[in-house]
Amino acid sequence: MPEPLENASSEIPPAEKELLAGVDRRIYRAMGFLAVGGAILCWLWRDWHWGAGFAIGAILSAVNFRWMKAAVEHMAQAADPTTHSTTLARPSARGTVARFVLRYALIGAAGYVIFKSSFISLTAFFIGLFLFLAAILVEVAYQIYRGFQKP
Image 1 (cartoon, rainbow, N blue to C red):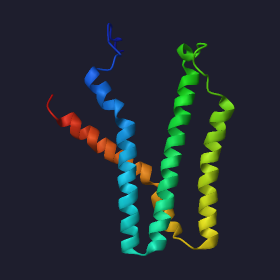
Image 2 (cartoon, rainbow, N blue to C red):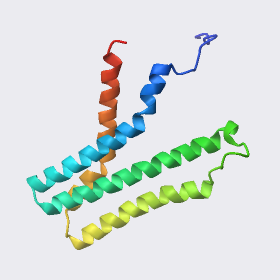
Image 3 (cartoon, rainbow, N blue to C red):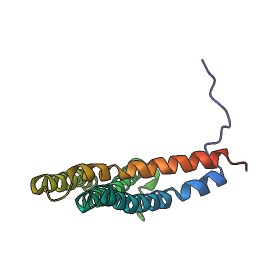
Image 4 (cartoon, helix red, strand yellow):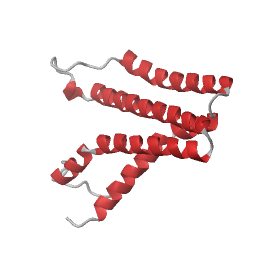
């Protein structure tokens, strides 16, 4: 049975903290570039119906990512016993659950309207919904690239 490491530091090195501090900004920037580029490509490849569908899906993807990030931060704050001081506002469980439900209700409603109207491409809408995954993969590639750079 492996022995537990003694004096093992769980502190993140300063260089890694600096790199992690910019993750949100880089992901949002990647989502912006991918959204604009994807909408233009869909419009040029097919027509404006595809461009609009992708753009709406990309916008909802960004909103979904932002709300998901906030919900995870609220749950982490609620689970951390050190954050329950009187100076910090404790997130409500009801509000966190409501945000989780509202995210999917908003996406479902947009998909339903697009499906019923057939005005813009439902396929492009769903492709746009995966924008946050593409942005996260861009961030992963960046992290791997930075990991191979010499200090």
